Length: 506
Ligand SMILES: Cc1cc2nc3c(=O)[nH]c(=O)nc-3n(C[C@H](O)[C@H](O)[C@H](O)COP(=O)(O)OP(=O)(O)OC[C@H]3O[C@@H](n4cnc5c(N)ncnc54)[C@H](O)[C@@H]3O)c2cc1C
Image (cartoon, rainbow, N blue to C red; front, side, top):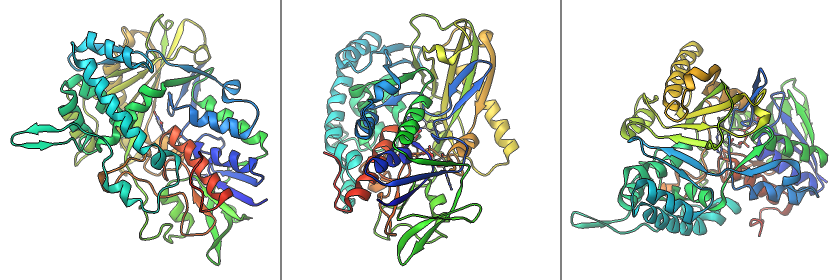
């Protein structure tokens, strides 16, 4: 039995903690805030309740597996998981709208044909077949196995089987997601549907590699899920309670300020009050710049390893308390696509990052009595990808965010009739709040690991230069997002328990 210190109570870290405790180790989680879950926060006011992090769960199998491996009660006995159907409604720039059924390829093809014209569904369906091949090629190395020591193979090869495209006298194959949209989908609305998946993760579809196709594939193949009875924060609660049941100890309000090393091996963590907590293994669930600080500025990774990713996009979230109940048949998620795609991408990823006047806005309207004071009210969440914090003053950031929130409400009014008339109050959650919840200084949100692109979208391996020090969560392999963070917990537990020979769960 080893003593294991886990830094942070984010989802990746808690997934590792529960598994390590089941393997017989004494696990203590040190969390700087007063609660668990990291990005999976909750905002409550006047009987309304909102998720402040992700509002939907892809690939629940990852969390089901955690519950199977750590106890008798399956995930479904601990939270009420429901499939969201339709998986989303889309309102495109030209006013066309389409609702896509959950996890039904035939249903999606038929809906797209009906809304966008004959042939559109078939092109999307054919794309999903290629996306599936990409998933089959990358699922193990980019989700289920520790990062390969020869990771350059993943960095150099684009696994998406692009269709040859004749252009002038040359035949080309799509290398970016935007090229997949333009050359293979050949409809601005289908391209918007595709690119929306990259944008939601803070990626520019014009530079994101073609294998970003796995992100829409995961949704269409495995469905989109919600946790009824309070939202995704309830998943964090269930994982926390599973940790407690396995005797993981939590210390809240306990910021780790240093990692102690002795003779090249980790020896424990130091807390803000200067106390030393000895440990044979340390599992760090924090961002790379925090980890580097904790290691006294010493390099955490070897020169030949994937460098840590830094920065990226963040999220602006606007929580709306509405009078009047949620109308019957309302879609859980509506994506209102940008009025001008080029303008949105240029603004967001250009030299002076900002937000377009009418950006792509995701509107979440869960059917969940736990979120509202009574049936005559509705809780709605709007979100948009925005640049991470740029060092501007708090006041300037707050003013910009307040202005952006008004823009979001205007865009959302295209999907929610009478939105302004029904509005009781709204609350704005900025990248500064993301920073406060996660400890990531600029509020950036990590993206899932992707192949190709010269390795730009890979994350560093879970092992480090220091023996006994491991990294978990969105900033290390296999990257950000709930399924990925959950898998990082499984990988770290495997590496600690079985050693460097661990090759992933079968
Ligand atoms: C607004 C928002 C929307 C998102 N939407 C989606 C989505 O739609 N789909 C999706 O899949 N993913 C989404 N994500 C990302 C997803 O929530 C995360 O990737 C996932 O929860 C994994 O988090 P993590 O394990 O990296 O830990 P984090 O959530 O980053 O938590 C890190 C924890 O470490 C603690 N900590 C930091 N420094 C210290 C220290 N020195 N000592 C002690 N504790 C410390 C922090 O307080 C925090 O609790 C979203 C995230 C945010 C913020």
